[in-house]
Image 1 (spheres, rainbow, N blue to C red):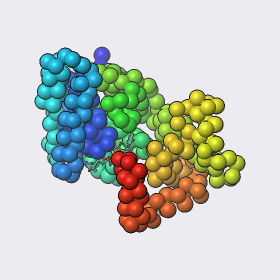
Image 2 (cartoon, rainbow, N blue to C red):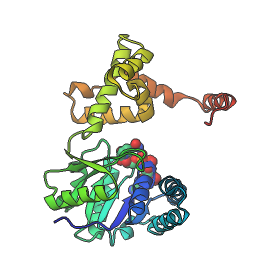
Image 3 (tube, rainbow, N blue to C red):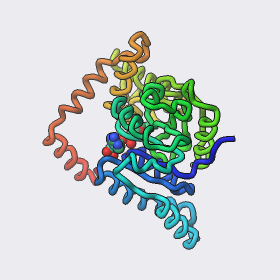
Image 4 (cartoon, protein in one colour):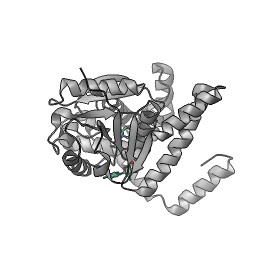
Length: 300
Ligand code: NAI
């Protein structure tokens, strides 16, 4: 029997943390959302409030009372804090969604390990780091796993539940049950780089960039080919842009460092150049591009 998760502490109130906290509050959990940056957590709380109202409108339509109850219930279950150690005191589950940096994550979990009750399950939402390496900072590897959500969390149905060799069956089942209570479809994966989705997606988009790099096909034709030939909603070049070229480079560089012999993880000179170019774009160029976008009647 897995233990039911009621109190959830989400650490990090950025893109992912805010989404996880929102969905947890909407699905009846008592949530504390934490960030080291007070402004960030306040902004996230406001964004979540607005998003819950939009969800209520969609979910309840003309049922005004139902919508009002959903909104006030969800908001009343969501609290915020800037003190992670204090915020884990009554947590059944801690989901970490802070900056993608192994040492920063390890430092956080080492502190939380001392403060959280013994039954508390720890999980990381990392996209590219090893769960085992993060869990090494704690004394509760049997109660540690990965809970990898997708952006935007309120919309994307998938949750990858990642087990390390030490994750107990009870912990694994609790994480899966919680995922289902969050309205997600869970899939199980071992602690392997990129888990399932990113392990396939990142090398795929990189192969598309390599195809372009070799001059085998144009960016437009690569995207058209995969949309019309493979039935994908977005082409790989477009997808790389959506993910962010810097994010793709960060992930592949990390994997290449850990697994230098894996051909699919080798860096691409074109990706390197493009990321440097983006970083070198001047404020003036950005302002001109923004003005042009606005003149075109677009929201930038
Ligand atoms: P983000 O940059 O939007 O938010 C990170 C937040 O963490 C910031 O508000 C920052 O102030 C806070 N933070 C940093 N260090 C902290 C600490 N020690 N204690 C408390 N708060 C701290 O990042 P994002 O995109 O939400 O990503 C967070 C994690 O989720 C990363 O591990 C990333 O790999 C993972 N992830 C990201 C996805 C994405 O599409 N952006 C998808 C799935 C996972």
